[in-house]
Amino acid sequence: MSNITDLFKQRDALFAKATDNILEAIPHVLDGIVRYLNLRDEIQSGNLSWEEAMLFPSEDGGESFIMIVGVISYNPGEKFELPDHRIVEINENTADYFKRLIRIGIPVTMAENGTDEDIFEFLKKTEDAENAPAPEPMSSDPTDFDLTELTDEQRKALELFEQTAGKKS
Image (cartoon, rainbow, N blue to C red; front, side):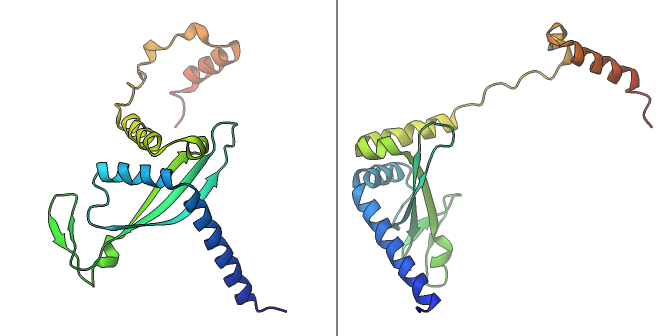
């Protein structure tokens, strides 16, 4: 019988090989993501490595997604721009603090049939949609609510609430 630790190592090796095969099958997806990250200056002078690809099947009959996971790491001596625009030089003691996890979801059909340009445009449109102004919230003014749309049961519950609202201690 095999040692349990050896069995886990075998499984991990098979999983790593399968992940490599998936990533090798979608170079156009990875190229599109890199173009998008470069547009946003996310990578800066770092090194991007792809770590994992996961399939997220749709639960509601919609589009399934592939989640691509990467890590951006920086070597000692490289410069890094902080969010407040200060530039810091990375050293051996701080390099691990500057690692960044990148997770990007791409529709499966786009990964299978699209080009790097399709991926790039999809990510730009997704970002634009996320940055779009939120719709105005509905008014919380109770006079804006049409009470004629209430069912009889809702109307009775409202009447009971109005009768007892001020009587609780």
